[in-house]
Image (cartoon, rainbow, N blue to C red; front, side):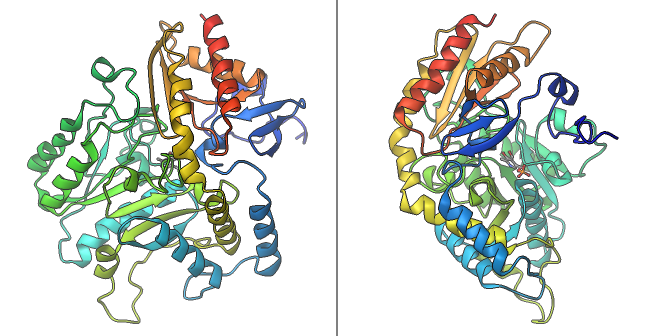
Length: 437
Ligand code: PLP
């Protein structure tokens, strides 16, 4: 096979044949900008894939990775340890709210989701409630692509090809309500009562069969769905009432994305029993994820014989030294530059810029929270997603990278973005929206 025909890479979540006809290639990145293969500067309007929160090519992170790989390129964490893993876990636990103090490392958001779900089921089992195996997710939830994640997740396109999935899963309704909440800024006012569907699901299955409820505090991948005011608190209350663990998937919302706080959990005043994160944990540089458990969850496992492995789970690369070094340097960078606070400070400007697109052709909703905005378009008749794809493609060629999902444009820039760049980003989108039919 020719080494240059580019046929070998089966691209993830990509229309492979369409891409090969019209490739969009990136060859370098620095600060807020990518360099495209044809030498153009392209503003990163989506932090890579919601992960490069400190912007690209941060020297501290690069140097830490270089040093780590030259010092200890790999060390197992099964029955062995190395200092960086313990340091990184301490730092992440210190950042997480409440008594979310126990960090289980993995390599991605998908693995973090499956890890959290396994911990939840095992938690009940080690406490003598082995019938609690049922998992409750939410429509339009995204928890990565492992079997646990797609089962609890609520995106039919990600599920339908893959057989029966996990048994014993049910779903809450999603919280998007354009009729009542269109163009709301920040958390939408209506919809807290949707959490009461958990009562209905509990009644149907009996609480003694339910292990956990897993949601994203703000659903990102299915089109930016901020939680209605009061919704997450209500979920927490119902979980507490019935002894159900609450898992927040903070793979997108973690590390300052919501503005002002490290995690959405703190921002929205609800502490889950397990919190998953990834992406911004290393500023996207090295694959890493984590499931962070509260004291009571961890301690439930620490009762058997001391020589027994409490949780038969883990990955070869759990706590990889290079990833841990990247994470420590990333957290230093966030702290040195007060990036979480900065995100909170600049979020109102970002919000105004996003909502300035209201009234442009085909824009049926704009929603935002922190440094995330979703712009929902009416779909082209018979061609859902086509309009958003065209805007995404045109934006790339006009020097702005965004995401799209269905007919929602998603904007989530690095938290270092300047006001002038916010203007440029939304200005470019406005120009395109005016001309796309
Ligand atoms: N969970 C959420 C909320 C996500 O947004 C994502 C990825 O976008 C994942 C899980 C999966 O993460 P990964 O692609 O690192 O497996």
